[in-house]
Length: 592
Image (cartoon, rainbow, N blue to C red):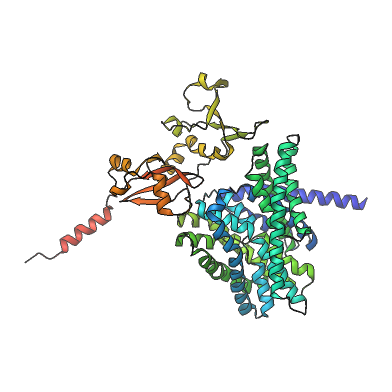
């Protein structure tokens, strides 16, 4: 009976801890604190040195929980990455995920060697553990902090953080083997093993994603089991790749990429479920990691660990990013932001548990340094992420319409979804904005009455409008139902006017007097961007004509389909500047 009572108490304590984590997220969001930091601190408070007094030191259970949680989080990240992003960001992200990880590990290892005065292999192990950006932290913080990055920056960060884990995992295990085994591992064997893990992981992930999407579309699963089937399939892909000798992290990310970019039954339900599942996995994982650490053991190692964390954030990561991204079309602002948002998270603590599991000497040192590094990264970089994004001007306007948008899956076909919006009184759709032809209005709910498109006529404020639209284009409808402030933000970024990509430069010259050379009069806006950029255009790309700017609003494939025009503005002089000029003129000596 005592065992049963203990189990019941354990269940009660676990439920209370999870409820506290969920409720704390409301307070954290209100004050702008990174939720992952809150979850981590909550676990520490509940631990043996905190008021909770829970003694937890099971690294095997931590490894198990971390593996399952990371599998679901990475799969969700893959599902939310459009395949078109790989045309824009694959090469720079791949370089960051390979050479960038090695450079970061080497430089951080040098800092650890100088600060801790430990041997080079041990110092390199600290570098390897903390070298990779954490996909869970990066994707979660970007999505939850209300930041919409331009595609070149956002996709580079997401793809890099999704595919750099295999390199960090392999580097960590290789260095652990170097320390534990007397005979050094041949370099050729190291590269061969890395290639094998990458190939096996890629094959399992791509085939697994294809199998999940086909099974979802073919099997008559009950509605409630469809999202659960996909989540279980993600864990299966991860485990199968690991057992087969491949990288489960790479496999599960690629599996999610395949599922997210193929027609899928119950797409809206699956995405909503995985959004909640990813959030819950973050909560559980960081609570467990917080329970695992003993704050009193961190105190005497905090000063050197803080120096290592600062060296990683301010030297190692920026140097790696600059060397990897300089050959590509990235501005210094974009390089600076990508350097700053190299967040460390659960993967680093997860890797720090490997020396503990293998019984390596000084294993607690690696774990504590990794934990402090993650804590500093979440506290400093996580908290400042929105400020850095806006300060370095790498964001796009983001109407917050998720609460008013409803998506419904239509069984029997995969090409269209039913999407509904609440119509605000100052929405652009009520002020002359023409809806695209591919968004077919099917019904309107007005004052509790359901009307078809013909009966409803023109939309009115406080209507609920429902459209049939392709899933990949639904987000393009958002701006038509934005509030007046959101529409103003959109206009201030993309310009006062919008044109189709088929409009010619000569037509813009005739309308607005823009300086267009004679040989470019017949050139379309789409062709103009293709010629000037000479690469894949993204939303937010700008080209200047005189003092005015042309901004990409929409892209299909590699073709610019809609362009904004921001006319040159003549700013009025500031009053203090006028007074200063008058004073200088008054003090000027008269001409002789």
